[in-house]
Amino acid sequence: MGEREGDSTRPDLGALLAAAVRGGETDPDARKRALAAFRDARDEGAHTAARTRRRDDWRPAGERRAWSLRATLVALAASVTLGGVAVAAIGSGAVGRDDGGERDRPRRPSSSSPADPGGPAGVGTPGASGLDRLSTAQDTESHCRAYDSGKKRGKGLDPTAWQLLVRAAGGEDEVDAYCAARSAEAKKKKNAKSAKATEKAEKAEAKESAKSSKASGSGVTKSPKAAKSAKSTKSEKNKKGGSG
Amino acid sequence: MRSSDGELGLAVARAQQGDEDAFAVAYRIVQPGLLGYLRGLVGAEAEDVASDAWLEIARDLGRFRGDGAGFRGWTATIARHRALDHLRRQKVRPRASALEQDVLDLPAARSTDDQALESLGTQYALELLATLPRDQAEAVLLRVVVGLDGPAAGRVLGKRPGAVRTAAHRGLKRLARRLDAEGVTEDGPRTLGESG
Image 1 (cartoon, rainbow over the protein chains, first blue to last red):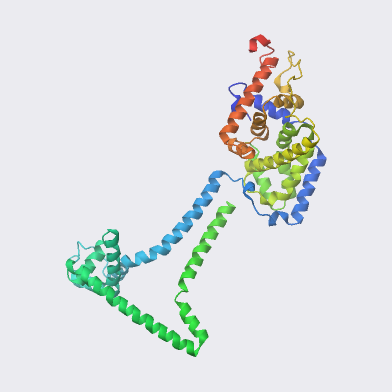
Image 2 (image 1 turned 90 degrees about the vertical axis):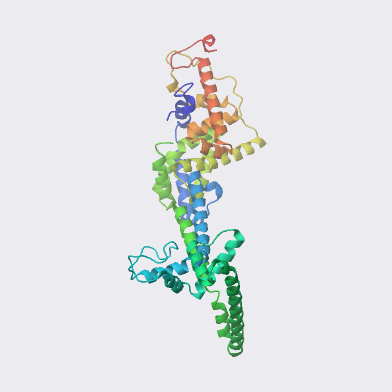
């Protein structure tokens, strides 16, 4: 156990000091008292009930840092996953449906590529009709939303969605007007829907108060569930970090 | 840091599960260094203070998190707190402790031809350490006697690792000079004139 600091002066001084100071007789009674104290604490359950304070945590600093980093990453991943669902819905709605349609035509490389709207010859599906088939009302609505928010942030829509939107609007110059009309329509629909829902709820409330509370609550059941699952993964990871 | 750290870590983990024999192993590994550290801090009262420290260690064992090296640091911190409590009580009824004693005159006549450093006695080593400034003495004790690395020793003392390393380095250098001046060297005795 050579002490580095001593090397320049006297290689063994540290070891000699250690040997000298650590030496001497050991008191067997002291050992017995320590063991008795251990037994008492154990039998009282003090070892399992005790909480680790900051001064009791002597895990290497790297390990402690890694632990908090892991927790941060888990939280970040959870928020990205939850938030990403909304973002992904904008772009992937069409693509997902697309893949479904392509399943029986596996040769085709990429139907969603705007540079190749027609696909290879011999497949028999004209590109235009393919795109039309893909752009359902819901899709264009979401593309419009993406287009609007992209405009605000100075970012363009992804090429596929843009292509679809242009086709639906009937030209690049028409997109603005098309989307404005769409969003107005969507708003109207939504208002009508919510008005209907309120009417329904009111009716239900008049009939059965228990049932109505269930109905109005059903709209929000998803988010606490998602939050709960995110929480449980986090705590699981934390436990892992704690034991490691 | 120490070869026994792996064994110590396992023993502590088993002791935390309630294994008394494992706790006895941890005691056997840790106690010499802890007692040496306390001898440097409180002198002859070291055994009593160590006993107090072990009561606390035994009671709080479940709170501890870390490996063998961490356990050395944790126990050293507990021992240090008990020692400082002890010194505070002593201030009420003063009594010289090893570090507070101003040992200017070390026992002389250690420079006989056959006396090698291996024979450095416990008392003499403590008296040597007592000639150091307190921060250097404690740094040397923690690094060399307890076997802590720089960061762990720094945490025990509430100082930066670099400051502790420097203090330990200076302390050891000073002790080496002192030993040389007294003519206790591995090369044999020297005269005072030569060592200057």
